[in-house]
Amino acid sequence: TATALVDIMLMSASTSEQLTIIERIFDETAVTPAVRANDTTDIWLGLSGGYGNEPSRAFRSASIDHIQSGRWKCSAEERSKGANLGLYSITFNNDRDLDHEAVTEYREFRHEAEEKGFRHFLEVFTPNAPGRNAPPDIPRYVNDCIARTLAGVTTSGRPIFLKMPYYGPGPMEQLTHYDASVIPGILGGPAGTHHDAFRMLWEAKKYGARAALFGRKINQAEHQLEFVTVLRAVADDELDPREAVKDYHGRLQTLGLEPQRQLDDDLKLTQL
Image 1: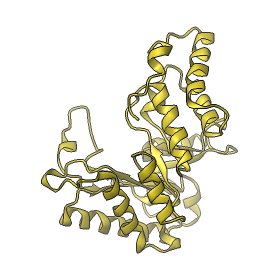
Image 2: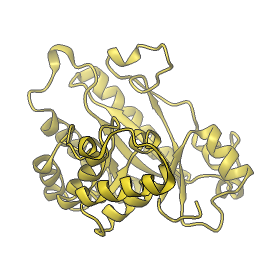
Image 3: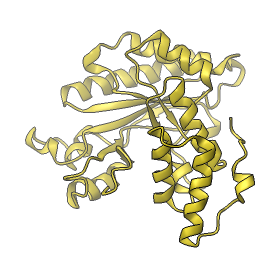
């Protein structure tokens, strides 16, 4: 938190209780604590779970009260103790009944969030198990779902930004040109090469993305702090993606750390 390299730290409700409410590590920092405000079955995965093979269903483990204060039915004064930003996730599967349920659950969450002064950002995943209903154009389908979902939401209930897969320049431009009020952010996905990570961030920003929420790409780096330092430099237009890979490898060498891949291999693009 002291480096000011990240703007948001996303956690579970239990982790946020420890770090935000008990230890107060975000006090006097520029980092905003955020909590996963709902679960969907396709991402609620233990080491042996297979729920991701079935169409997503929405549910919530955490309550807004617990995120904000650490306990159920908190007072208005207690709401400022914890996090006041949550990630709400939806996975559409082009199934009328399941998607109706997902949008209805999201509406109920928004109403509660607005009532309790709780901010959120919206994550929309690629269909995880559409079966015979698989849309022929997945990026267009996801963009359409976002546009339709938010069309009925006024400013007071809207997400402050989006978190979604990066499908390439065309779909990103399509979404941002359709509704300039939408602030798209990208999720990182599998680790890949470091060039994949830096290039994805650089390209997505070029075509309209304004946030990047990377998990595995950071967690699986040889040195997370150095990786985030270089990632931030790319975001701030201080390095281009190829330069960033070389810079990061130089940092690893200075620290005496063995890279996961040799430089030539790490300069390859495997996900874009």
